[in-house]
Length: 142
Length: 97
Image (cartoon, rainbow over all chains, first blue to last red; front, side, top):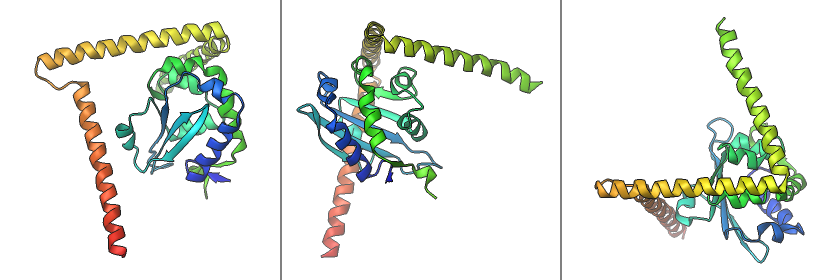
């Protein structure tokens, strides 16, 4: 089991996403980089987390965990996707749809949301990647 | 009694959310629906940006800071915070030597 939002977890998810044959098609025409922010939850996920990634050549060319979520303000990526911890968990477990969550404002997206909506059909790439990484959620760690 | 009053709007909201979710799923599963939804979202975002631009111009004309000014301050703060963090690390490493 790999701890959610840890460096090994992000590394495993990125590797799984990059292995997918449909990835370059899904990413074509999107902005060059993205940051995902897991908002702090005082009780369940007090430290929060933020990761930044850049695409190149049809895959995720580089990524890093950010020490502080405010680093996103300095980097100014093309997309910032931000949601509370429990919602990320629901999405990862397949219980919530990320596109619907973005449209309803539960997931906050900075950047061209229409580009992401157009790629909603490629959601299976992320779903499959998440399924290959056995995730341990911080609120379930004993 | 209050339980009952509270329960009905909640049930309506829940039912509404379920229906909206089903409707969104139907739209998103159909490529034409997806394209229409994307176009609508794009137009809404463009409209919001335009509105912010106008608001910004009005505020600037009134000599007040606008969203862009606040964003710039937030960026500068983030940069400063990162530089302090980098310097603290350097000092820590120097001390170890």
